[in-house]
Image: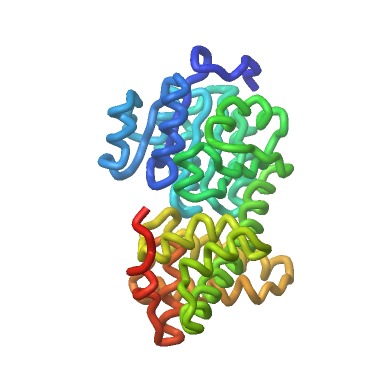
Length: 312
C-alpha cells in the first residue's frame, strides 16, 4: 500500500459516476486542486465537470490507469460490479499497485467483501463508503460517510473524505454498506411518518406549512422534515435521491433481513409503498414523492397546501 500523504500535488483522483450526487462530490475534489479523471456512461452528465477542468476517460479502466484513488457512485450493485470488476473495462484492472478503490454506491455488503478481496489480491485496497445526505449534502459537502475496510486506509483518505462530509469508520469490508442499509431502514419509516403527518394535518384542516414549522423544533423535527417538508409543500418532487434507487436499497435491506432471520415490518411496509410509486411510473421522482402514495390511498391532495407554500 502506498503511504505517502494524500495531497493535490501527490495524489491523482478518479471518479466514476457523475449523476445527481457524483457531480457535486467530484466538483469538491476539483475545487480543492486535485487532478481529476472522470467516467460516466451518459457523457452529457460529465460535461459540467469537464468544463471545471476534469479529464474525461473512455472507460473505468482508463480512469484507474491515470489515478491513485478511484471513487465510484453509480446506480445498482450490477453497475458496481461492472465498473469495478469487469476484467476488460473495470477500474481494478487498470489500478496500479497500492491504488485504492472507494465505492460510495449503496450496494450489497457481500459485493463490498468481494471487491475488497479482489483488490487485496492485486496489492490494492478497496473501501466501501456509501453516503447519506442527499443532493443537498453532496452540494454542501456535508454528507455522512459510512466507511468499511482497512482503518489505516480510511484514515489516509481523510483529506479527500473531508471535502465530501464526515467520515465514520464502521469496521471491516462490508460494514459501511451495512451501516448505510440500517440508515435507510431509519429513513424509510421516518419518511412514512412525515407524509402521514402531513396528510393528517391537511385532512384536519390545518395549514400544513404552519404545522411543519411548528413541529420542526420539537421532538418530531428531523433531517427528513428539513430536507423534504418544504419540497413536498411546493410540489417539488424532483429527485435528490431517486425512488428507483431507494426501492433498490430497501430491497437489499429486506434480502439481508431474510438472511439474518430479522422481522422489520416498518421497512417492509415502506418498501411496498415505494414500489407502488414505481408501478405508477414515478420511479424517477425523489423519495419525497411518497406523499403521492398516501394521497392516493386517502383520495386527498395537498395541492391546495402547495399553493399556500412560500416560493423560497
